Length: 121
Image 1 (cartoon, one colour):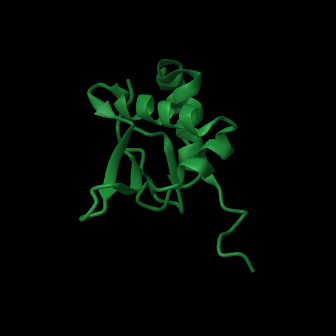
Image 2 (cartoon, rainbow, N blue to C red):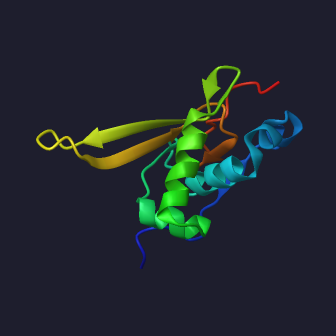
């Protein structure tokens, strides 16, 4: 039996469309956000590898990293949609993991947890 549940789903709030968030994000950032949401846990955190994220988006690793950077820089009403935390090796200072957290403005939830708490209008 696999470690994950293939029948699990992410809930999408239609207010993202009605409020204009989807249009404001644009196609690339929206695509990136949707892909990240498929990796999130109940706290909205996810940490897919660059390779896996690029593969799931159908783009190169360079393109995936560029898109992630743009998504992490995006804010609506001064609230970021995604926050990024880089975990570094204490000795070498090299990045060993990046954790992305979908904030309360991101229109997704999983495991019946309501992460979407911010009015978008």
